[in-house]
Amino acid sequence: MRHLVSGRKLGRNASHRKAMFRNMAVSLIRTVRVVEGEVGQPKVAGRIVTTVPKAKELRPIVDKLVTMAKKAAKISAAAAEFGTPAARGTDEWKAWRESEKGKNWVKASSPALTLRRRAFSELRDDLAVDILFSDIAQRFGERDGGYTRIVRLAAVRLGDAGQRALIEFVGVNDRTKSRKRTAPAVEASAS
Image 1 (cartoon, rainbow, N blue to C red):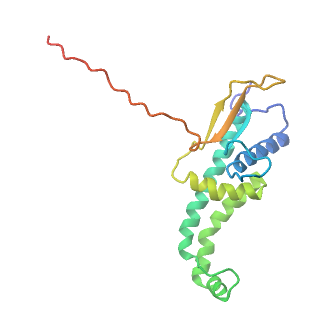
Image 2 (image 1 turned 90 degrees about the vertical axis):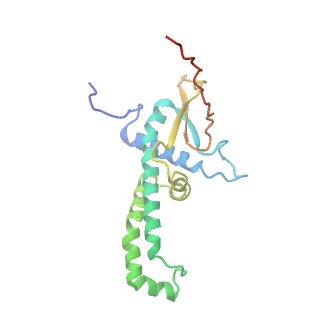
Image 3 (image 1 turned 45 degrees about the vertical axis):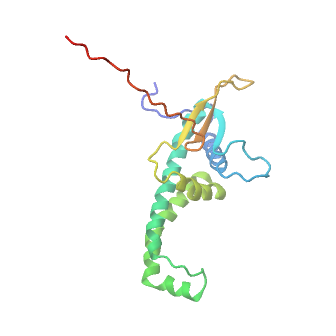
């Protein structure tokens, strides 16, 4: 019995599964930043096509990474008060770095660096980490969870008839219509 055993094996051993989800997370994050004219760009930004079970397993991984990036953005914003506008390597910057303000900046910004390093240990891709901490963290700054959506596709995969699905970041490709229902008018009966 599989009581309290979470996760799917997906026909792979642990290292293969970890590598697969790492590659899928990097692919999803890298599709956010589209460069026009470059070969291999996605048709729609922030979306990949996979199977439903893989998408369901990938969602919490990506959501945790986005949460880490958001926390790092808040920490960096709080540490900005101790920062300096001087260019790195200048005499002014070196004096600031040795001052009390520079030491406070290091203490205040070190948790953000730790979160960035943790995200890199999960993804192992510099560009994906940069996109995650600059673009995606800013995009979901005010949102509390639920950063991805899974949409089942009607057409099954050729070859094995696997149920395909999109996993995408929310907020850009939303097609919600706001319908306002009005309550039917009820006449008061005299009884």
